[in-house]
Length: 210
Image (cartoon, rainbow, N blue to C red; front, side, top):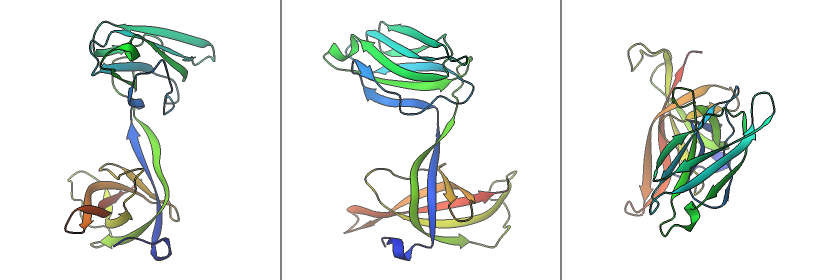
């Protein structure tokens, strides 16, 4: 049951909470952060994985909260994780040495963390203005499934399969027309062709009081 835009009952934008500034990416001499550092700045956790030895350096360049240019080089003697002692407000460049020359080239990932190493979650849009089929489930103001929550409604959402993204549990789905926000609780892929290919996704979502 694909959802042609002409048959869509709602249009949703999907966002996701993540601490990643750059997901694991094969090391090159020059790299670019995917997401921005949260407001107020943060320290940067750099992880090297899958290299022959994982030996090399990662230099992060950016600005601090005062707008001054700052830079720090983290040295790795093996695959692992290091955290900057410099607090960055922005990242303008990522440079590596040694890593890209290994027989098994490692991946490099960056996360935003606080001083004690706790990940700083930021909200990023992963899919904008997608047509969906939407249907409420149960009665309005139904009793919360999870004790202690303030769930107000439950719903089912069907959305087409795409190559560029896949919905995940804990995604936040925002109704463009009403601005209601729904938390995706579960995702089921609906298959056709004897179960060989995903056609669309069925999402179970709940809405909370604000």
